[in-house]
Amino acid sequence: MQLGTRLSGKVAIVTGAASGIGFETAVLFAREDAKVVCADLNEIGAQATVDKITQLFGRDRAIAVKVDVSKEDQVAALVQRAVATFGKLDIMFNNAGIMHPQDDNALTTEEKVWDLTMDINVKGVWFGCKHAIVAMRKSGGGSIINTASFVALVGAATPQLAYTASKGAVLAMTRELAMVHSRENIRFNSLCPGPIREAIEQANGALFLASDESSFVTGTDFRVDGGLSSAYVVSHQMYGASLMLTHLFHPFLQTAEGDPTGPVPKNFADSV
Ligand SMILES: NC(=O)c1ccc[n+]([C@@H]2O[C@H](COP(=O)([O-])OP(=O)(O)OC[C@H]3O[C@@H](n4cnc5c(N)ncnc54)[C@H](O)[C@@H]3O)[C@@H](O)[C@H]2O)c1
Image 1 (cartoon, rainbow, N blue to C red):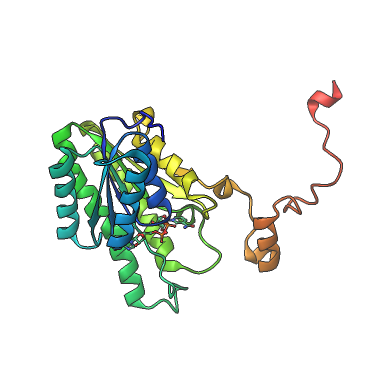
Image 2: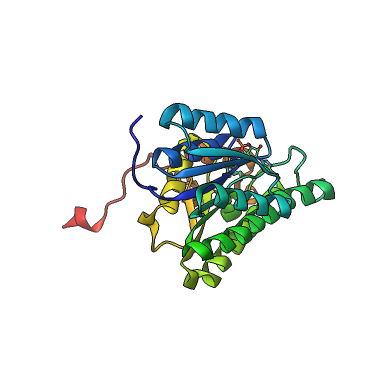
């Protein structure tokens, strides 16, 4: 397969690279000529991602590293391994995250579920940023992308409290890091996926943020959600849950202002 050039000369770490967004992004980064460290708790899955990259683009473009992002010593070792193998670090995609099956509402979510979610989704991102900053200072800068979620912008109607709170923390932390480290030429952006339709759509967002095309973009909540977080959706208190779901999935059926199938309103241009 033909290689692109959008990340030529760059070295990237992708966490959560065994699956979903991380897998697609690792392959896309490699396609755009980056050297990629595929990091995941799932070592076999991370190696499978490397094998895919090798099959598509040839050897010596990627390595697999087993990491639990919630353990600082492992994250430090991950960054050291990237630098030892490829000479530097330019891109850190802190993407690994969980939504625990027992994550629920304020009354029913167990503390251990809350803590595990925060350990991986928030502390894991902090550790990734921390050790990437150390490496990027030596290479003159870089781009750090932290995966958040659209639920941190609008709130979820289905309870997943720890997850939503963790992704809100990612947004806030990323903005502050962007300001604190801007003079060091290190950019920080959050990727805010909507419900995943195609993981490649998220990977394309990450690619833009990783590349020099986004050189003046930092501190953003970068939404890749098909406009969902900009949608006018009524709350349960106003209309009831069933209508709210109707709005989410069939936004043209009815709006809070009334039936959109009625006559088109006249505007000024029509009247002159
Ligand atoms: N899927 C969605 O609809 C959606 C929506 C918004 C945001 N997100 C976020 O996008 C990111 C990727 O999600 P995905 O849908 O690709 O999920 P996924 O489950 O397909 O992939 C997540 C990967 O992270 C790895 N992982 C989990 N815990 C880890 C740890 N402690 N250390 C290292 N690796 C670990 C898993 O092994 C897995 O390979 C997550 O941060 C998720 O919260 C997903």
